[in-house]
Image (cartoon, rainbow, N blue to C red; front, side, top):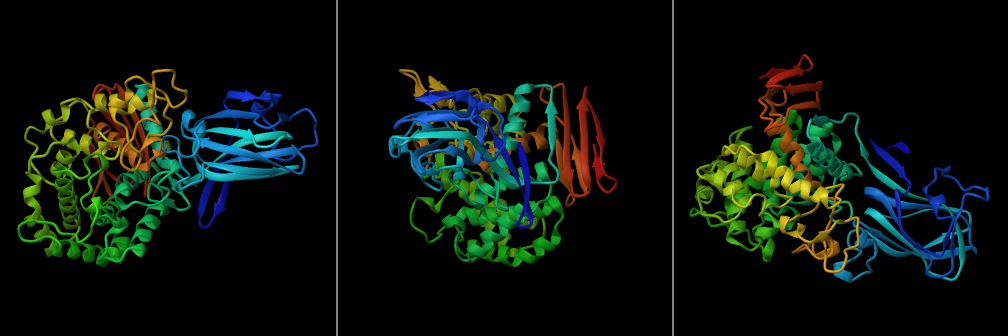
Length: 535
């Protein structure tokens, strides 16, 4: 069941979901009535209710997929009011948790609370990211409940991409990455997460912008997110309190305008971008030493797994170089030239991690021996934030097997029950771990509660994070080989299917849909007349 609502110059999609599975229950009558389709309105009929009887009667429901939204409970009868404990979980084990257990918390959204329902009521509770719900009656009462819906809410767009291959695992990865990004399109912005990180992070936004452009075409959420970050941050301060994230904002502006040809938006914001570039240049001395004038561990940030290592310094320098290069692709800037000259040594420095090596290549560093470096250990050392950059650098270095790495890494999350991709995932977590849709048996690891690090330990870990959607963009750019150039006026198609037999792609563009079919080494492309195709 769906509703589409116009709200604040945007369209909101509401999806009403019945439970797909009843995991467990106690002291509840007519349990199967919750699985039946009914009107979303309080009814006077007497044969459609599920009855909670007595304190500590409870039910645990599985709605089948990650949801960004809330629970809507339609109640027919109780003693005026009744209190329940409502616990949401992105994993089944999180739904069983209480605040404090394995870092479970109500951070950024309320996922564990006492709620009150009333007689003949239709009420919605909280707003978070979840798949599972535990509802426990908190007092000695009898409550007749007609419906428990999960309400899935996200911004909706006029067009959406379609991508299909002959490999169902690849198709599922594509659908999951797209759904991950879709859920993060909220309130006219692109959030990073739907349970936690329900805000706009400039560095995380890069992959989210690119995926959004491939999925939906140019859309207001991108511009809203960029403009919000600009309005929230004076140019002489660091965006999101992280120096590299100011560099990412300039990269995001340049990439967005290059892919869409929106020169008006670039010109409206380039003075702010130039102020950021000037500020960076002033913080780097002639020997390439960076002094950003802030305290704490976020001074140099590439990604969480490299935090407080020399690779985080190398990675930060390479992100700043990438910023300068992207800006110079659009127009001249002397400060960009200075930055590239002063920081060039970091693109050649010895590094230990795949993500730092990837950014060296993306910033113009040598690709020598990089292919073997990336292939060593397979997907060990991947993080969901940096896998797009690692795979891109691997392909630039002559890597011929990115699809296997994609299936090994993202396929592992799918094997654990993922319906969206996570804030982070280390392949070593896979060993002896239960899926997110199961309670671990004795001796097994809880994939959600027992892992994670830094700010995402245990159940605080987000299992729907927009920055993990970049695999969708990588497949478009490097497997289908579709790249928009000349401010979006030209599309180059140079596929390498990596063993796939066929690929069908439909992408929205500012001129209309681009349709590409790749099969048996042949490319069949149909595009609007204003979009030039180069094969």
